Image (cartoon, rainbow, N blue to C red; front, side, top):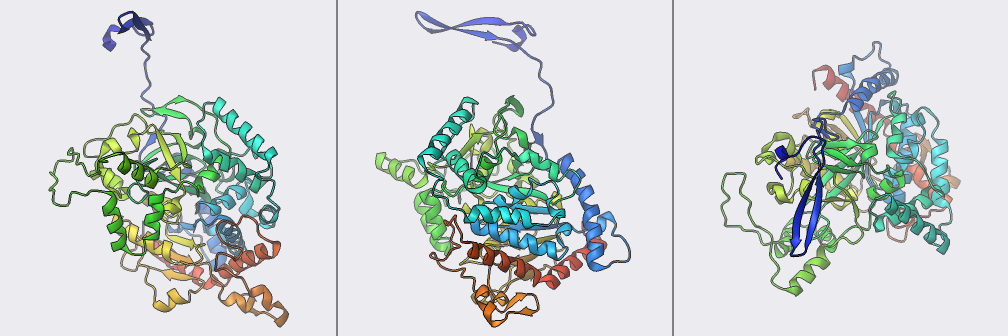
Length: 570
C-alpha cells in the first residue's frame, strides 16, 4: 500500500487473501513522526556527564591543592582526570575495592578521583555505595560494615523452597510486564537476597542523585555484548557501558537513557516503555558468570599460547586464506563453515550455545549501517572482529542483545575510561586476580595496541612476575596521549611485617599479616560467597594498606599528570 494513498490520521482497511476462503484484514493509519530520536547518536559525552565534569573538576582542584599544598588554585584545564579501574572477582573484588577506597579516603585522595569503573564483584561495591548521595564525603565505615554483614552471614536459605517460590513469583511478575526472563533473572533475585536480604528497590538512574553536584566520582559499569549462539566471545564482542545517565555501545556511538534500558526500540524511537529494572538485575548482568559457552572456555584455556589458540579456532572456522577481497566495502565474504550434517550441527551447538545468558531488547534494532561505516575513525577504534565487515551480522540486525561478564574477554573495566572524549589522564588499576596479577593489564595493552588506542607499554621483569610488588607505575613519555597507569596487583608483600605504613608488627600481631590468597581451597576463591569475619577483615586491611603504603607513587603519578596538563596535554 503506497503511503501517498493513505489519508493522514484516517484509518484505511485493506483485505489480504491468505487462502481461497480466508482473508486477513489490515487496518492502516499514517502518523507524522518527529525527527527527534529517543536514542542519542554520537561519540561525544552526553550533556549531563559534561555538566558533571565541570562541577567535579572544582572538587578535584580543591583536593589537589590541599594534598600538594599548592599556593594557587588550578585552572580548569590544568586539573587532571583521574579514574579508578576495578576488575571483577566476585566477593574478593567486592571486599578488596572497599579496602582500596578506604585507603584513598585516609590519604585524602578520594576527592581527586573523577571516575570509578567496575564489573562483576567490584560493581556490587559501587552500586551499594551510590545509594548514599554523599558517600565519598563520609566515613566509609557504614557501607563497609554492610558489606561485611552480608558476606559473612549464613546463606543456606538462599535456595530454600520458600525463597524459590518467591523467585518464581518475581519472574512471573516481570513476564506480565512484558519483560523477557531468563536464568540470569533467577541469579539476579538470588544475588539480591545474598547482598541485601530483601527486595531492594533501587535503580541505576537513582544514582544520578549521587553525582548531580559533582560530589562523588561518576560510576561506570561494563558488560560485553556477544552473539547469543554459534560464535565465541573471541570472535565477536562489543563493549556496552552503563552510567547513571546512559547505557550504550562504545563502538556504535549509540546511547539511551539508563531508565529506558530494557524497553523496546525501533529505528531509534521508543516503541514500548518497560519499567526500569531494579539494580539487582544489572548486578547479575555485570557478573554473569554462568553465560560462558564451551568454546569460550576452550579459548580461555588456550589463551596463554597464541599459536595454539589460532590452531583451535582454525578447526572451528574455515578461513579463506588465499582469497583476495575486493576493495569495495560492499563485498560480503563467506568465511563461516556450513555444517555438512546433523553431527556437525550438534557439535557446533554444544560448543557455542549460551543457555544461561542475559537477553534484553535491542535498542539498536532497525538501524542500518552505511556501506563504508567500518572505515570511520571513531568506529574503527572499537572494531575488533571479522564480523565488523558484515553489516547484516552486527548488533543492529539482531532482535535482542546478549550481555555477559566482561571477564569472558579481558577481566577489566578499562574500555569506558579509554574513550578519548573522557580524556582520562591517570588510571588506578586495581586487579583482583590471584594467580595472574598482570594478565589483565597486559591483555589490555595488547588490545589497545591492536586497536590504536593510546596506552602505556607494560614492561615487567622476570622478578616482577615471580614476586609481584604492591604497585607499579607505567608512563609512556613518548606518547603523552596515553594515560598514566598505576597497577595494584592483589598481593601480600610488606603487609606481612607492617600493620600500617612505617609501623612494624609486634610478635603477637604477626598472624594478622598472614593473608592466604592462593589456591582453590583458600577462602578467597571466586565461587566462595561466604567469608568468616576474620577472612573479611584481613583482606580489607591488606588492600587498604597496599594503597596507603604507595602514597608517594600515587602522588608522583598525579604530579606528572598535572605537569602534562600545564604543558598543554588535551
